[in-house]
Length: 272
Image (cartoon, rainbow, N blue to C red; front, side, top):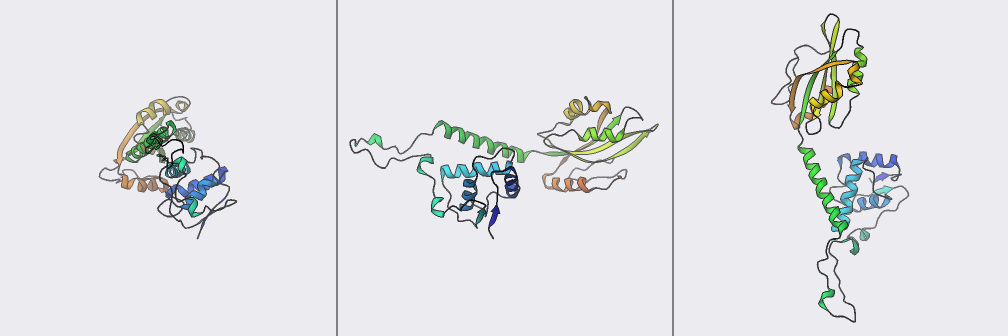
């Protein structure tokens, strides 16, 4: 059954395509095909970086068209208001877009061998595009290698009159790439004072817990509610179990039971 898309030049259409490409490298199948060219041609311009998956796919197809062309048949795609691309139109890239242009015929009035350019030099634009692709591949590889950690924080209020609901809202309002807030509970300290215990997961290369505490959680305006923060537990998460941990903290039922443990991999969450 053919895949169908519509309004690809609108934010709504790009969002749908972005979600579709979240788990796919190509529009259909496991190699670039005329289905990719049909969708590519339906886009009036390069998509915004906001649509990460579409941008990745678009740049890849652009590179294929410049270098080697696309020959796969595909399974069929329908783009509302746009006709499918014929196979012969997608088998090879235009001569003007290839890296090495070959002069097949010399001018009639000059038979000099210098007129035959077998190895055309790269233009500045082509060099820049190649550097950008290399940087993107390097960044992607680094992102895949990034480790992740689970952290348990104690967040202490100023006194027993501090609104703990607003305190937690203020803590969770801190958002940044690589930071994922999890479950929480209030723990009695004494004299009517309670502290907030909250779990979070971080991508090690993107988030520093010390910086998070010193520059965000204990600075204005959050320090109106937060007196101090302590790290109760800090554990590395195995790559193979990160998805399970996210599922656990997303669905765990409160309240917690004291002395609970989270077996994450060869490490474990220390008892609270």
